[in-house]
Length: 134
Image 1 (cartoon, rainbow, N blue to C red):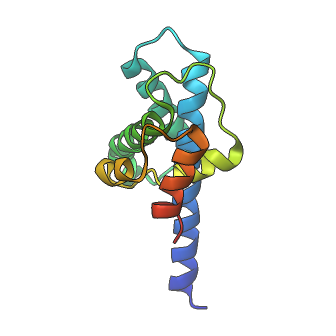
Image 2 (spheres, rainbow, N blue to C red):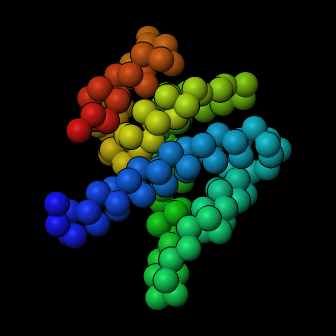
């Protein structure tokens, strides 16, 4: 394996971990500060991701907007599988990983994989099977 392949694998693993962290933090923030607005919760999660991920100084202007996009996509997929009321909902680590695996899928495609009649587990599995397995 050459250096380029090793770097590509490392980057893919880092991005995958970042998506999992985003989903976990969004869920945690929803539980820990329930009275705040969605915008405040988003700012909080973006700031936490920014604190966790240290990038070179020349990339710093770009990480906030990218983390914001990641948080928006995580919320979009969580709304799809959980609905808009997440209170009292806990996801297992396996469910978090499956939601994170489809975070970057376009909303219309993810929506096409689920239906209202499905339960939580079925919605997560349907999205993951269609888009999360590479």
